[in-house]
Length: 352
Ligand code: PMV
Image (cartoon, rainbow, N blue to C red; front, side, top):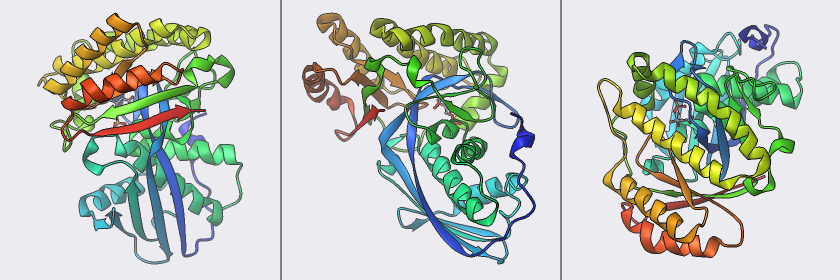
């Protein structure tokens, strides 16, 4: 499929309407870091969609009014966010030709703490794209659910790249790779269920909130710094190559190799930040302390507790729901929680 396939039809009938949608966040296992014009990823990525960390959004559209956007986050008006959404809507007009023909009031709420550093742009843009497609469904000719979801993923990508993976449950791939049929740079696709070993279908993700608040470098700036990073091409190639073992691991349930690959991907993401010019570090002391404790714990117990990182200081603790969870949970509570700012942990699960 090409961008042309998503151009919107000119025959539509608009009317005033409010739609409400919800979309979860996701956490990448093979990371996307670096992009080309038009939100095209420099390498393919794969993520787990979370279950509890969600954004709930209602979109009130008043037809035939001058185009304007107001946004409210947890009841508080957010002018900066409204400006961002306004720009985004103008940018996607060719895909939804009715989009500038009315005014919007968008109310959005996250089920996770706002300042937690959990990627709210993924769930946020996912929910907005779903709302837009719900409006589109009532203004234009009916399309299939599959097509509508794909277009929501396509539109979410144009808001925030990784958001396109949040439209689907379970394991989701974004970015063209020969290892995954139907994969595309333009939208996310579900990783084939038949190719996933049972051990990967029921997983905990406990997010340790090491540092709450604004990040020192936004992901937009971080992606941009890959343009001049001397290691970028090697990194893009590595991410592409990592799909080969990942595919094998997902099929045969090799937990040890999974842990090694996922932790390597997380550390590589942060290594890229350190090798950017200017260099930046998003990990905090607590991040490193937690990582070292996880490695010690694994050496001592052999239990499959491991981590991944987003573009921030928080640590996503991954461990399968496998019957020996109690010991891992007790260790987290006793040893790792102390490295968070306010005993902050968001307990999520990936189940599909
Ligand atoms: O979607 P963005 O622009 O916020 O970038 C997200 C990048 C990472 O979260 C670091 C990795 C990923 O693949 O989600």
